[in-house]
Length: 399
Image 1 (cartoon, helix red, strand yellow):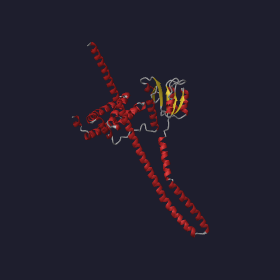
Image 2 (cartoon, rainbow, N blue to C red):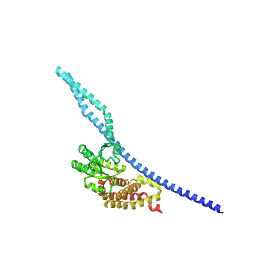
Image 3 (cartoon, rainbow, N blue to C red):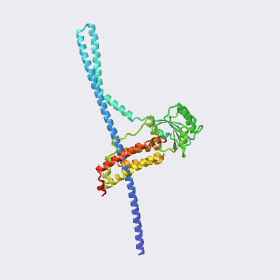
Image 4 (cartoon, rainbow, N blue to C red):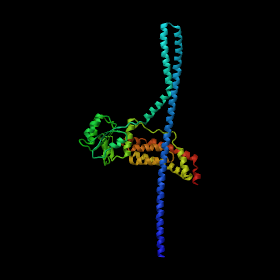
């Protein structure tokens, strides 16, 4: 009996462990499936945006072809017919005029024939001109101009030169403050990155010397190792645009470079995501309904309609209190929840704000977008509720 009981206990423990392992694997697989599904949703949104861009490009190309065709038709109507008539008139004058006049008119007739042939060549080359124009436009769209960056680093720190160059930017590297300031004053740069501790002249003195020569517009960021609270305000008070913590994360570096690019294009202060006329993507809602089933889908919509406005209010409160890190995390979380139920306009606005919140000089802009974001969220939830009333029988489903 003792042996049988021990064997049964060991068997039960083994089955219990296997069951626990199975539950853990099932939970892991569910998390992976959820992650893959969110990625597929993101890819679907990106493909839809690309399709819209492609449609717009096709329409623009078709319009360009039509304009070119109209131009060729106008050229044939307004040039060819008058020249042909003039050629006939000159032929008559040639037959009726004197010898000298006849020679001159004969020469004029040959010149007009040459002009008519040239006109025919222009008309035959119309298609080639359209192709060349299309290729030129395509080349202009795909060409990206890199930034000109001055990097003044201490040789003891890990260099950002390769990271910047691999992104297609032109980098001038100096290892001390004196040479860095001279390079900044002699050449034109879009961005300057300076280590705080440098030989010959420290980073703050170098930045102040550059400011005295070039003014306050040029972006200058300090590279700090182990930054402390209040460093950003102290360095901004000394003339720098902002600070970056070493080691610099790839995401933070790319966001800074994107901000500099938008700033050069003149779109940083003016750029406001255009509010689309359709705030709700009903295709996403129908897909979610098919995947989840009617009752879970109805419960999901009820939950989001009730919680999203509250979460948006909490996000704007974090902006009001200048809790930038909390606001960035809240914006990303709310964007994911909103995109899941088709509120893609709200999700796009929140992701744009989250990206800007990681840039020191962009945070005040984000804070001023609180009212507009709340209005956008309110209008989007209203559209969602209206769609739910027409397409989801909530009471019947929950019964």
